[in-house]
Image (cartoon, rainbow, N blue to C red):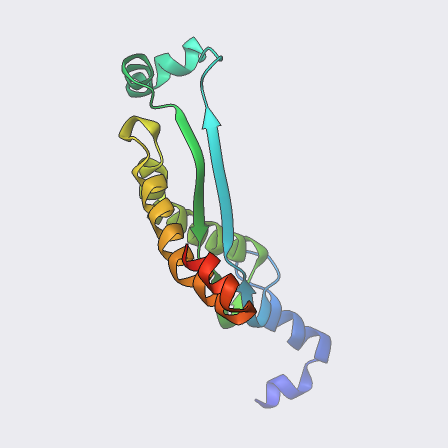
Amino acid sequence: DLEQVQKPLSALIKAQIDSPSGETEMFFDNIHLSPIKISVSFSMHGTKPSEELLAKYPVADFLLRTSNVAEVEDVILRLGYYEQAHGRYTITKLANEVSSHYQNQFMKQVHVLVLGLDVLGNPFGVIRGIAEGVESLFYEPYRGAIEGPLEFADGVA
């Protein structure tokens, strides 16, 4: 400890923030990145896929030729928030951690994308439609009851 007292303050700070890779480490009390919501819609109708791409991915070529797989409409992907507390990070380490987190979150949401494919009759859209209908079944009469008895009857109807 006596050796540390003899060193200049700038040398002590530099020793604390430099990492073995030579990048500057930063201390974060709290890092919080909000959840990400992505709405996906795409269609391959009217476009011709690249022969080069189809040669590279034969499974995609097979699916495109045998069915109408290449259409997705209004599929919502929800990627969870990223949060870390009391950590030391270099810019590279932080970028890698955030990237890895959101890649894992995307992989957890792939089933939503698959269920949104029209080849399956869009079961995700059916489930979402039923959920919206159930919500309206309770919400509309409640909203009508607040406004008045005639509006309540309209909400039930």
